[in-house]
View 1 (cartoon, chains in turn green, blue):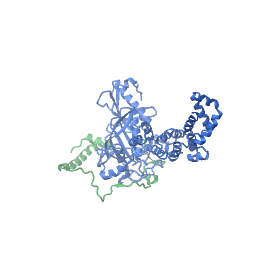
View 2 (view 1 turned 180 degrees about the vertical axis):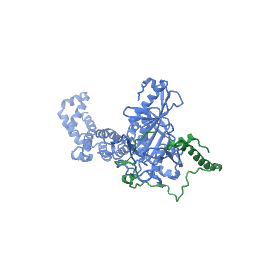
View 3 (view 1 turned 90 degrees about the vertical axis):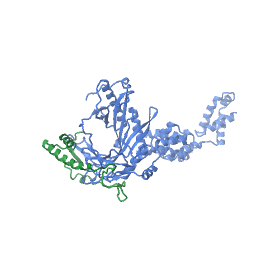
View 4 (view 1 turned 45 degrees about the vertical axis):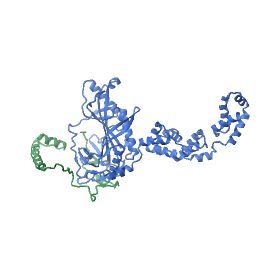
Length: 99
Length: 490
């Protein structure tokens, strides 16, 4: 399946990625190849087959819901341990521009 | 930002607004929706967090059963059809208070659909359709102001991240800002009744966005809509809608076009302001959440939850009219909140006189609570105590006037009516013998009035009754005095 360079730019933008023109060309080719490969699945006739979004399924042995019991959180020291920037118990990020 | 010249009422009257509301409601669970962190409010920032709600790589969500059941209750209360199988889906967007990079919401297979709620507006009852109700997690909180370096940094608290929400989407059935107000009021009342949310707007437990368009009256096609955000109080909701309706009408009247956009309501100016947004910011690339199973709700589970449903406001209203003989208006007032309705029923039960109970709860008690700025749950007089007071009146042991004084003392001291009556010797005198003694005394002291009465000036009776009441220091039963006096004077 062919992917246009505009489509690559659009997807990159949604993913907050800045790509050079060279990267856009390379991605168009690479992603296109991935999609072509995935397209092989379309060769299979799945008429009447229920789409399956996950490999898990509900069964007696699969506990899928939890009871409403709280457990203490990690606390802010641990929570912020890997934050590039923190202050006053908060994560700090560069001023947000509404998008 | 230039203010629009807003059209006058005559111009506005030629148009009709079409409004749909999207309401986010925080569910009253103890733990978050996909992890076990507490949902408590007001804790130090970033304390109630774990790998799941911090969005750390590899952390896996597990759905909270109570959140699902509360959403089911909301769906039942709003007459929705609950899907036997619904699906969680990822909604992808970037924002610092969304650490996962996606919200786990529901998309094309929401928990419940096709409901409605009855709303009274301008004296008539209307049905507002509910398109859907779905489950999702809340984001954290961004603080853009209040710190010394707020000009450069945004502060993020993730305690709220992962708090369970339901989003309730209405059909575009609302036509006026008043109706939107009534819709939100009715929604809040029902959700509080069934105990799935406190709906505390100040704490952000109830948040509202509106889709608004206008069209000339008689037109059946919809106009272009704008989405108005930040309608987080009942007052703002009305103000923002009125402003937005006027703005759109004035655009159309001056030959311009309404553009489809997201607008933010600014409570300081009372205006809505267009938000700069990227064209494709709304491409959320939804896809089924691979880490959670489809949500399967069996008939058996659904019926078990239905059995836990309390009586809803509309049912209760009807029952109060039917069983207690209350007027429609009184029933409406007394069912405003579940707490008030339960208080009233207890008073009615203890006193055995529902009408009198209604009058006391809506009258003296409401006035006293109002004056103190108190809720019914904080009433210094319990329902049992008020019931006892009302019973004393019904049994004729005290007069209505005496009861008002006693009630004031109950409010001040928290004492029971009976205790006050006994201590102060405040019983009503209904005993014929005692009353006759008082009457004889008064008749002896007022021979002239007796003469007048007997010669046909029967209006002096009121004066004589008053004298007997005075002689009894207000404790005589006025009806009994009246009857006995008439008999005596022949």
